[in-house]
Length: 177
Ligand SMILES: [Ca+2]
Ligand SMILES: [Ca+2]
Image 1 (cartoon, rainbow, N blue to C red):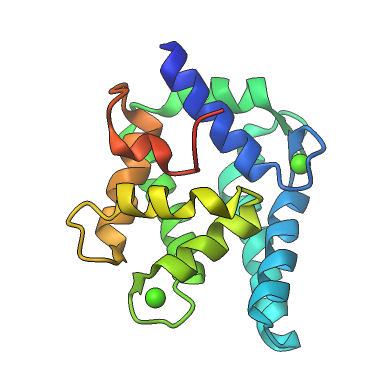
Image 2: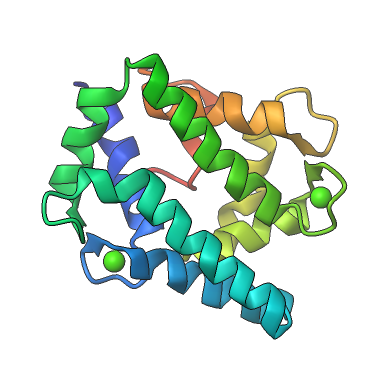
């Protein structure tokens, strides 16, 4: 594993450990949901749905990685990615996870992500919103001003598998830590 790949996974960990307790747990997803609900002003019914989705994401994707069923340290997350990153089935499940996030972030439900929506994604992950525009432009590979699902998933897969330090997908979760 390259130092570059390690930095990417650390960056992802920091962007996902939204309650900043040093481990990934279901609560990090509920924290993202809480922030999203507040930013977008979702009503109670929509908020409940989002929290249900947060629990589902944790249970379907991360829970199986946690040896205690509850939490993942940064080292455990890194080890999990290293073990799985060349497994096509894993990449499919990663795409499913990020497709869920794409549709949440597509607030106006037009099928693509605009810069204002992408900026909200940074805010609920706790990434400095000042970096959103550069990351948005890096993912919008055809530069048409919106991020399609295809562009989003291509960047995700490249982020989690690629070793090219010049690849624009490195900016997916903001500047690398
Ligand atoms: Ca956490
Ligand atoms: Ca949209």
